[in-house]
Structures are given as structure tokens and as C-alpha cells.
Image (tube, rainbow, N blue to C red; front, side):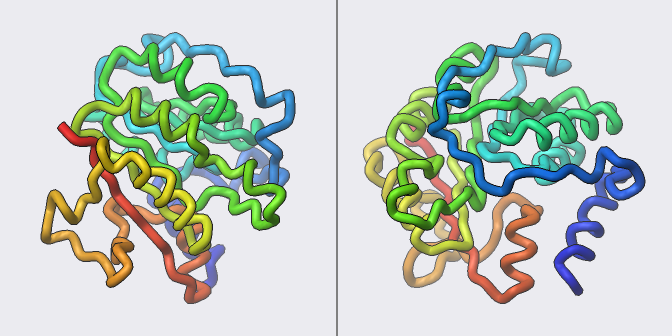
Length: 244
């Protein structure tokens, strides 16, 4: 099945009129420089009681939420036990995702136009409930060596995630680019005093001989994941848990 058909099938599961109105079609820049001055100012902290029905629920944060379909699917599937927050640096995608949230009458999900590196600490330190899961899924690889500093997983962000993550909370990373996945893995595993991989905690979790998870633990694939796997690419995944 072509990638576009697979994505449409996923979208239909959300009952979104994605392809029936202009809101489903936006032109976006595929690559954005997160180091530009316009993204260096932390985003304004939302009024949590306005964006979520119950702002004390455990929170999942998706960094680089893209179109938002992945997070919306989770919010629709599990509406009462968690809140969901997406950070995305492309404003048009945030605007469209918020329109979809409104269309679905979801009150447990919110998308922010923000650079996670600049905004994560300021935003998450104010959230009333526990931060239980952070996902970073197929981020922009920024292949050129001189652009590696633009990659989202850098020490300041990792430090902020671990500072705000609840004990027992999890970090899920994945990429279809081995070098990017390895870079993210190294960044988080430099904190092995605070994190341990899920297969250490749960021996039933199956990894390959290099320690990459063989299956996606989230129950739904991102659009990039669908595309990559349809092309025969491997997805490199790790799931960490903060020590109690």
C-alpha cells in the first residue's frame, strides 16, 4: 500500500476531515533552523486550566509533534487518564493541529508553537500534574556536520527533561537515521545514573543485538515511521525509565 494511503487510513481512524477542506492542506518548510533568534525566546506558559479539562492528570509531551496526528490519536484513544502536549516549531502545523483538536472536541491535548530547547523548562516546570512520558520521534536529522548543533536532542534539553520527569516516568526516542538515533541514545545514556532502559526493568521486552527495540511500544506509528518502514528502512528505538 502506498505511503499516502497508509497515512490516510490512519487519519480516517481519527475521523478527521483532513482531506475534505483547506485546513488539511498546508505548505510548510521541511527544515527550520531552531537556532535563529526568533526561536530563542521561551514560549509563553499556557493557562493549564484553560487548555486541559483536568490539568492535574499525568502529562505526555511529544517534542517535534509535526502534523499532530500521532498525539491526537493517543489523546482520542486514551481520553481520561492523561493529558498530551505537543511542541512544534512550524506554526502552520500547530494552527492546523489545534483546529483538529477543536473539531474532535478533545480537552486533553494542546499544541504549542515553540522551540522545545528554549521553552521546555519554563513551560513544564509550571505544569500542575506529573510529567510521565516524553517522546522524540524521527526528529529532523540535520545531516550536514556543521548543522548538527541544530539537532533537537542537546544537553540542555536532556537535562531539562530529566529534571522535570517524574520518578518512573519514561523517555521514548526513535529515528530511521542510525546516526541520529545513536546521537540521541548517547545523550540520554550519559545519564545512566538517572535512567535505565526498559529491557532492564522488563525482561519480556525484546531488543535486537544492539539494544534497539524491535517494536513500537506506543501502539501507533508516526507518519515518518509509516513512510520509512514502507520503504524498507529500519526504525531505531529506545525507551528509558527514570529511576525511582
